[in-house]
Length: 339
Ligand SMILES: [Fe+2]
Figure (tube, rainbow, N blue to C red):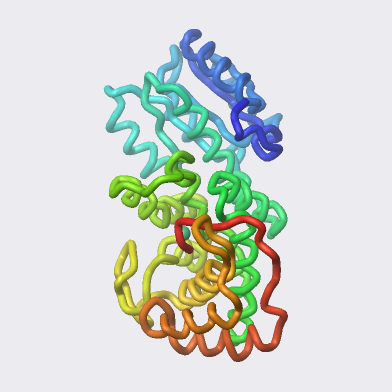
């Protein structure tokens, strides 16, 4: 059984549309073995009828039909069900169509034929997560967002509970900063979702026991950009996208991916970074126990003006940690890959 057989995926309904019965059979095998609820049809009009009738999380359309093209079908889906995420199955001859599908038609993914191994399943699983994020943000459903963040953490065994603690610490600091409640809400969501790009990092890299290779590091360093792209596709607010894209930037400009520095790093991101570093230091790691509160603060003070915004760090220590019981949770497991 795939470790992705979780309630969020099981409860999402996926519709697969293709005029090719071999492709349909292959898709049926892929989804039935993974536990994703799955409907299929070889008729474009029937697909639109199903979408109007059922709550479809993801439609996957083969670009080849007898009567129409998958891209034409997908372009009609948003008028029937705006929330349904769209995936196009294409082949090498469709590259121009594939690019247009992403940039003009709001298609979340293009999967090239023939797909290999778990490729289709993994892509659909990730798009289902996007769907749940999108639905939860519309309903301001923090519980579901938390479960999505936890789904990512389950993949990275050393970060369980991290996102919810970062969201809580960041919310405290946002409140102490006196910024608007709207941005504070975005900071809470951004704290929960900041590592969402890790869903793209293969589990064998995230949980590798030996030293990481340069290639492994390259893959890991892509997670802020991947996460921001997901957030962009979902039309999440700019502060949430900023948090996801820039949570590994440093105040001195030596971070990644953009090497922006100082106040050039959006305020909401600098807030989450302070929370992220604090939680990393006060959580166990694979190779060390968590630092004591005093030691963690000593380390953070040494990061002032380097990794962290000096003003926000001071505020966090003086107004948040001293005013609250700073240990929100007792993480039972350790972290490895840094904030
Ligand atoms: Fe991260």
